[in-house]
Amino acid sequence: MASTQGPNDDDVFELLRQNVNPQVKEERERVVNQRLQAQQEKAQKRLAEVIDSNSTLSVTISSVKVLGATHTRRGFLERIFNPLLSANQDRPYTLAEALKEVQIGADKLQKFDIYFTVREKSRILLKTGTDLGNAEGSAYGNLLWRNIFGGAETLNLNASLGTRTRSAYSIGFETPVLSNPDFRWEIGGLASSTQKSWASHEEALKGVGTKFRWSNGAGNYELGLSGVWRQVTGLAGNASPAVRHDAGDSFKSSITHTYIRERRDYPLLASRGYFLKTVSEIAGWGPLRGDVAFWKSEIESQAALSIPIPGISGDSGISLTTGLRAGLLYPLALSGESSPQPSRINDRFQLGGPTDVRGFRLAGLGPRDGQDALGGDVYAAGSANLLFPFPRVGADKPLRLQAFINGGRLLALKNLGGEKIDGQAIKKSVKSTIAELGNGLPSLAAGVGIVYAHPVARFELNFSLPLVLRRFEEGRKGLSFGVGINFL
Image (cartoon, rainbow, N blue to C red; front, side, top):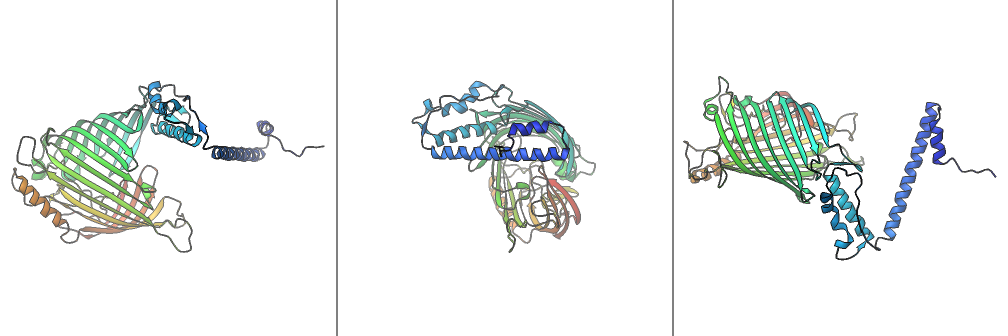
């Protein structure tokens, strides 16, 4: 009797190895791929059924073997997997519990970013390229050395040359703490030179620092200690007296704390969820040294809401996003002194630009001395953006039309005269300056534009129209182009 069963997989692969018509070969490959995928799905389903029916059975884990980790220290891996062994448990595992614990260990290995599938990643990565963003272009080189001592340590060296940041060099060494990918320690250094054309000077930085990072279900945290020598130099011939007053050297040592909670579905083009970030810094106070002392705090938030359209199932591609930023710089007295000092141009906030408050020039809001933007000690800014799918493109593509309105205020502390001021005067000034934020309309601009969310950055081409513009502030009517990862 003739068999009605088709060829097995080996027979099909043998046929594919023969010199056949390309179209026939392509069709046969498709059939084989479909058959293999069906077999895999069937095997996974069968495995899931077996696990489900035996999930409460007692099991023992006597040993764990990690294949392919040729450059990773044994002690590093033991910290991760020894707690899984049944000998180190108070009671026997059920099958479901054992599989869950093994998955947790595997997830930790993945978080270290030193493995690729079941093999270790290349230990050395060298990359060069160009960047365009934050109102400048640059060329960069990056050397990443992974798993240096077999414990998921990394050494990262960066160098870049740009149109505004003329040069920037950094080195950082990072290692997990106690083989935990959610706890990391870093030490490093930097040197940079940045042209600040909006304030007629160049700023040179050299410094070292250390950071401790950790994360949990509530968000990501970072605690850092740094010491930075700063120099305001390269003054333009027409630099204002206020900029010249702050020229020269200063040294800042500070402690910073950063908290980030990311709950947006797609940060570069969010349609739902929210984002929260806070940064706090204290400099030159108590045991910290240097010639500047202050408390500086910023908060940034964003919320996104998808707008459904009746009759359209799924994501309509229409969304409303709102953003809010605010900051305060509070002068303190240096260690051993009683009188706080006014803030310096190095430390003040700047506001305005194509990725910030659109419709204003870079650092176009806030106090000025002639043509120079001096920055401010208190600010608040907000925006509302309505995004629509681009015609004939569809909601699933990262291309949108947007209509927006945004605005803000940037103020210097009021009624502070002279070089030396007392703490009571600072308190009164901070209170009155914060109250001034709500005095009248903020500087406002509105516009329309095109948004493209590339995987590495967000691109915006907008037409903006300033609506409320204060004396000496610099608006920007017309087209502007912005590239970055953080937009208001």
